[in-house]
Amino acid sequence: MSPSDFKYFSSPISFGFKDCNLETNKIATCIELVFISNPLPEGPYCPKSVDQTGGIYDYDGVSNPGLQPINHKLLMAMETDGFDIVDDRGKVRIAHPNDVVNQRNRTKKYCLEADPDYKLKLKYLIPANPTLRKEPSPIDNVLSLVGVSLYGVPINGPAPSIVNGPKMPDGSKGPVGDLPAVDPCGGHQDPSGFYHFHMFPETINNVLLTHNIHDVRCLYVPQTVNTLIGFAMDGYPIYAHLDINGQEPLDLDQCRGHVGITKDFPFKVYHYHASNAESPNTLPCLRGVRADNPLSLE
Image (tube, helix red, strand yellow):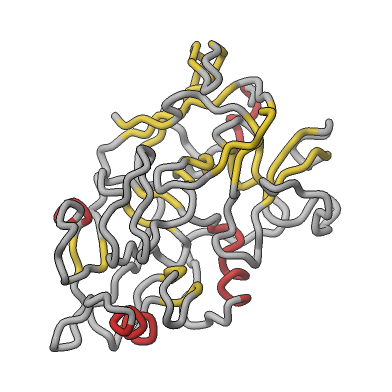
């Protein structure tokens, strides 16, 4: 990233340069970006009853797995799989994640909804001079940070598993059976109070159509096919699914990246592409080196 790249972001509170520690134990120059949390409309998440439709979820249970709306069909699949999330009156049990995260042996399960904290500030550290790693870094747990959208919203890896529980950075697992609902744009509130994405919202409507989902759509984020949608935490840009010529790239690596010319970078640059069909449509790994503690809250 360079000072000219700031023009792509929507209203950061501040930006500047500072020394930072990289995950390779080297000291480098990072760009520091600060945003106010929750800049976008959001929801819906959990339906109140089996007769309503909420957001979406990529269910990993035995019965009717896959990306789908959170409605009667998904809720009944969870019940069939032994996750008691609906009460005797057909009402969905809803809870804040912090209220149930330590109750590992309970039989009742919940659809999880956290509350927004509009006073939070999100500080990002992104290497100013991106460098490629020898081996990609996987995005494999609930706190793995993929990047930052041009709205200043964090982009995380896949939403936590219902069947296996959320995988934490220390290797432990959270409680199983709770539904971490995301909205039709692929985001939800962190328990700390800031909105973040688990999918790239700019291509999500085509992902929904690919999975025969027609009753919910992302309404808050404009859909695109080949524009810049954010920066990965390693400093490399992220684009929608088509390249500058309007073609599907054929040379993407295992992290959905390649080297080429883009509209914003007329000289060849390594960059990533979102999927417009797969769920999740984010990146499975990062090729570049990230800063230590790339996201902090104020």
